[in-house]
Image 1 (cartoon, one colour):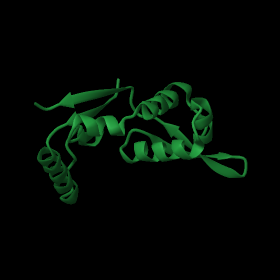
Image 2 (cartoon, rainbow, N blue to C red):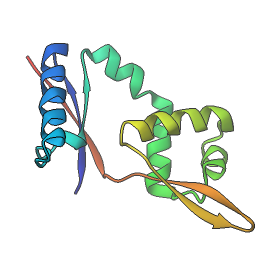
Image 3 (cartoon, rainbow, N blue to C red):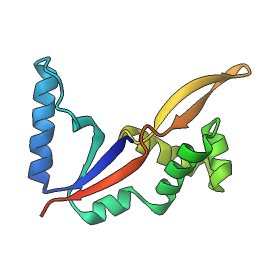
Length: 125
């Protein structure tokens, strides 16, 4: 089962991890395992603001109902298309959603997918 991790740590720790990852990429070394599968926050409030009830519902719908487009996702969840598009873009930027462009008639549609089964929360003390 693939898991994405959310961590809540001091900003200095997150920046140190980012610097190590950047240096590995710049020098051609392999990025440390797990570096790409973690979303870091500096507080529990920041994590809550990011992973809202609506965004969790989108992730759940994408994973379990497999919509054929973002428009279908908006219909499935009963939400405004523009708001769903914004949330999906944000989730995609953080690696929680992947978008594939698939042909439908004479145009291409964006089909969302979720590349993991669960979210783990780690809190540094």
